[in-house]
Image 1 (cartoon, rainbow, N blue to C red):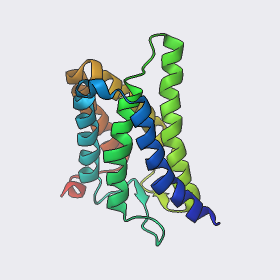
Image 2 (cartoon, rainbow, N blue to C red):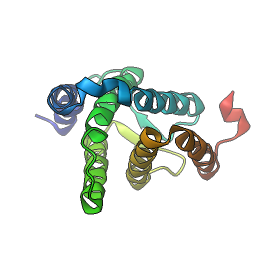
Image 3 (cartoon, helix red, strand yellow):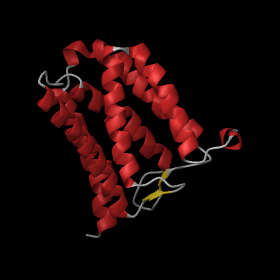
Length: 179
C-alpha cells in the first residue's frame, strides 16, 4: 500500500474513529455543558481563520482522488477532532505542574502527528512562510488559549485579538486578502 493511501486511511478513517471512541470513553459527557462554550470558541476561531485565509492559505489540504475535498477535511477537524480534543483535554487536565506540561505537550504531539501524516501523504502543503514548526507552535498556543478560555473566557477573547493581528502581519496578509 502506498504512503498517500495509508496516510489517507489514517487521517480520514482511523483517526476520526479513534477520536470518537476516545471521546466516548474519556470525554466528560456528564458535564459537557461546562465545556460547550470552549468548544464554540474553538469552532468560531477556526471558522474565522477559514474566512480570513480563504484567499491567502498558509497551509493547504490538497484534494486528491483518495482524500475528501478540502472543505470536508476542514469540517471533519472542526466538528469531530476539535470537540473531542476539548472534552478530553480539559476534562482530564492535571493538577500538578509537571503533569500539566506533559498533558499539553501530548495534545500538541497528537495534532502534529496528524499533520505529519498529511505531509507524508503528499497532500498538505505550506505557503507564505508557514511551515510545520509554525503548526507545532500554533498547536501549543491553541491549547493554552483553550485552557485560558475554559477558566477565563473574556481573557481568551482579548488575547486572541493580538494573536490574530500577529499572524496576519507575520504572514503577509493585506486588506485585499480580506475581501
